[in-house]
Image (cartoon, rainbow, N blue to C red; front, side):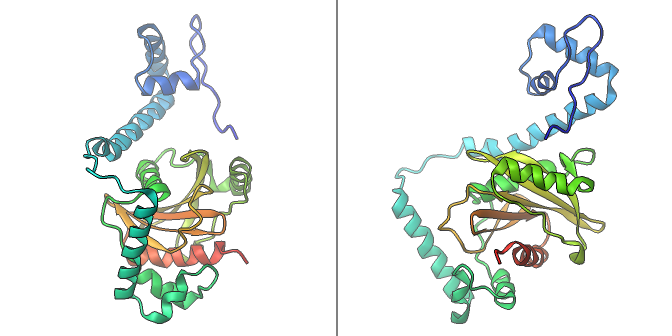
Length: 274
């Protein structure tokens, strides 16, 4: 769904397109074309603010991702199977310390009732800050980039919710749904399409008058074997994430763990198949 129109240009110059504006924000234009864009932006205040927003997003991404470039590689990289086995052993140990044996069934798909889910969310093992990986890390980064935006936090607003859901469903190739969180005090702001690891993913954004914004990241690229609820942090962003059916979900906010768990419970209840 194309929700913006390419801006026009001044007479006598080639039309300034959306691609030109993005290239300008990324510092990828030649000198002559850069001058054309700068003249255009000087005469179009709203478009200049859009470009400034993109630059701030770039800065936020660099702030999150540049430290990863300087991380040293381990002297011995474990084999994939060995690493997976180690993660499951660590998870099992953490669960044994904080969850009574009756909640063990919580880890099996389809065996979660509301009360067990609530207890499990409160005691979910936490990943150390900064160690989110895969779709959960991408969700945290997307939240950090888009949730502070005032003018354009989403591509399609909540007033076009049905069009938004139809568009995202078509692009992802599987039905997606925006949970209704009004009873918890959060209203849908809208959503957007984002690039995932190998294809498109969806982000829904929610707001409340007295609380930080929430984003729900929905991807069909999640590993099917990772079904347990997990909790982690990326900077100030806290994330509950899980896999259900053919989707991975990550709920992110700069909020307390208890508040995020309360919303995650409701999101899970609404999106669980059947």
